[in-house]
Length: 117
Image (cartoon, rainbow, N blue to C red; front, side):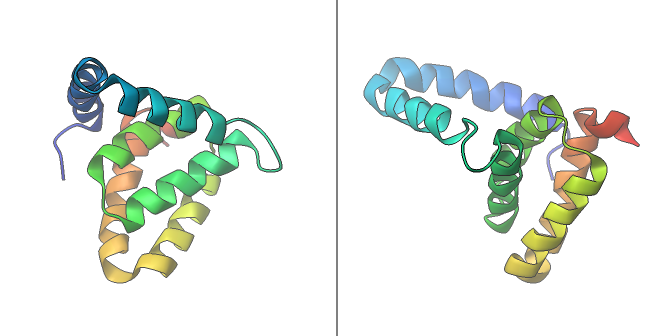
């Protein structure tokens, strides 16, 4: 586990900015896909963000936890919603996802999720 998910997102964000200069077409394509994917449609942006966090947990991606925790907080995800998403992630990913789910809750709380209840 990282010491701070906020710091991790800052560090990764700085690298991604560098990538924007060294591989602009790739980053533009990724950013365009992200923007299109997260728009409200048949599923709300909040639902899609919870799905992204669940996949990040199953993939054991700490950077994903950092960025998606911030997005969940920004979109007003409640602790109850976050916990239900954790249940699905653990169901789909087993024991290793249970450990990463605990890290995801730490990230959510660190980012002020439901005022870090």
